[in-house]
Image 1 (cartoon, rainbow, N blue to C red):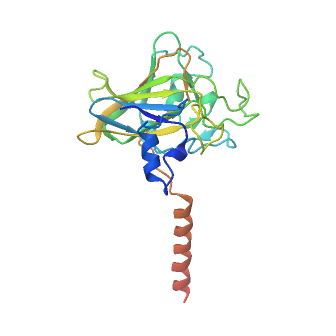
Image 2 (image 1 turned 180 degrees about the horizontal axis):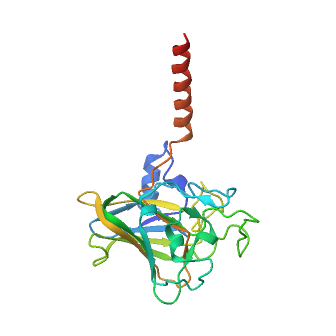
Length: 253
């Protein structure tokens, strides 16, 4: 079943769960959908509305959160890249966001990925085109600031459990330019980072590699993440701080 989504608010409206479900299932399909998810048979592929989480347009370079891909080996159909400097394949898991830390696909093939050192339970996969490049970044970005191109495509998420001998589809992600608001945290913007929960109908995915297939030559990815550890919500952080303050106050008494 295809899921058509225009805005993350459709999936994050706590007081309108029924309406959220209708939009998520595609029963009320808007004229243009920024994201269409199509899980492969026997798999689940879900998006909770995150749009540009960990976006950083200040730090140079912008750091990626801890995830299992950082300890893996990146690969791509085009190695070296169609644009080898600075878009080398090792950028796919170098731990930094931004155009200068991206790999750009070329005419030699249509995939990028990361192999893991051992079989791992794969719970989520995240990627984006440019999740934060400041204006005037140093070292300088060749195109100056956040880039929004090279992101509209149909992506197929895959995994392997035999070191790349067999690749299994998790599902398709159809990105369009419709419905975005050019800001993290709002409507779906195809060039920002998005994280997807993945599983099989029988349970967790066990794999030692993740691959992302494309349909367009020239698609770019600045980082592939596997099993990113979620950051606590701001409210949770505040409550944690209050709890610590209360604990210290009791100790003083």
